[in-house]
Each structure stands twice: as structure tokens, then as C-alpha cells.
Image 1 (cartoon, rainbow, N blue to C red):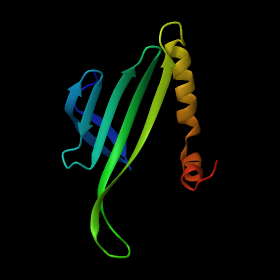
Image 2: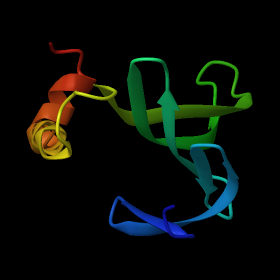
Image 3: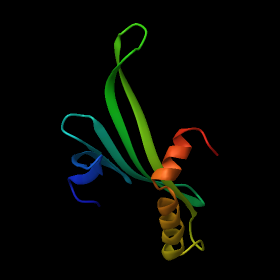
Image 4: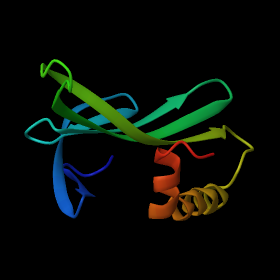
Amino acid sequence: MFADPQSVTINSVAQSLVRIESKGLSSTYRTVDGTYLFRISHQISKNRVRRMVRIDKYAVIADPITGANSRQTFGAYIVVDEPIGNGFADADIKYVLSGLMTWLDSTAQDKMLSDQH
């Protein structure tokens, strides 16, 4: 099990996320002010396991036309989907995951967020 609390640095600011739930193969962490939610989970099926790490951000945002405020959220997450049993070694999975995280630098993020593919 991961330590409690978890720390994630967002825009150069460390966010401390305390565990608010842990059941089965899943734990959820949240900042004290509720701005960020962090989840780590594993889903096991007959032949596969899906491992997910996810961060959600919550904010109250004004509608540009009406000016009415509403609570909005967005999430960013990484999923590793692998076969159970005679599948890939952890080292192989880590190589691919590291490659993906390296590729997703600031330039690639900008391109992705501007709908490039």
C-alpha cells in the first residue's frame, strides 16, 4: 500500500493528498480543500489486470455568458493494461511506461491539448 499522505507537485506547488478511502485494490486520496482527488486502482478480470493512476481537479468556474458559477472537474490518468500469468515482465512494462512519460513532454502536451494527432 502507498504511504499516506501522497504528494503530487502541480505547477511547482506540492499538493498533500490524504487517504480518504481504501477498499479492495483501490485507494483514494484528496487535498484538504477538495481541489484535487488522486486515485490508484487495480482491476483484475479473468485474463487481464488494469492498473490506473488518476488525478482529478475540481474548480468553481463562471459561465462566460450567464456568469453563473458551477462546479467543474477534469481528470488526467494513466492506465497499464496487461495480461495475467504468462504475460510481460515488470521490466518490459516499465520500459514502455517510461517511454510514454518521456514522450509526453511540454511540447507533446501542447500539441495534444490543441487537438493534434
